[in-house]
Amino acid sequence: MTRTPAEAPSPVSPAPLTAARVPALAAGAMLLGSGGGGEVATGALLLSRELAGAPVPLLPAAAQAPDTLVVHTGLVGAPDVLAERLADPDDFAHAVRTAAEVAGGPAGAVGVIEIGGLNAVVAAVAAARLGLPLVDGDLMGRAFPRIDQTVAAVAGVDPAPLVLVGPGGNTVVVRECSRRLAERLLRANVLALGGAAALAVHP
Image (cartoon, rainbow, N blue to C red; front, side, top):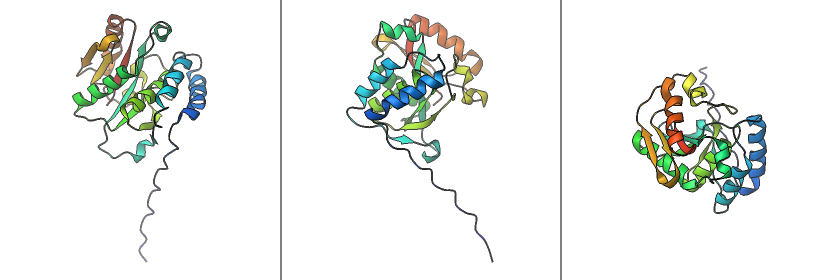
């Protein structure tokens, strides 16, 4: 008798992200941030407002088609800047669209850079603004201070194209950069953009 290998089970998609689930996401982000990653409450308020229109689908990475372009996004710079200058959801959406365009887009989903701290909710804000699903996962597993500390960087994947969007839509596009120089490029350009900016990276 010939036996055929069992088919791998299809990944189960979690329930969509709704405004009612934001407090749980924010609590988890604070825990995984372990005191780092920036203040989550402001981002949670932004996300609750974005989700008032429609929920964001959450999809496992394995549920994506192999050619899906996933763009990871978040806030880079000094989180304290948000106390004086509220982040604009359009900046994150613009960063994702620009990175996808440079990479040969369009974006099919939004990815989370780090699940700890503010960036856990910022990526969901971008997904809601763009009407795209959010990948149920992240590139760090917690909050780390540098972009070269993602699992993608550890695996040898360069971050480019890398896009920064600051106040007023001022945009920096780095088409090619190594993992070694990415952090230095980010710091120099974020300083020019006022200390904090929307980031799209690792498409």
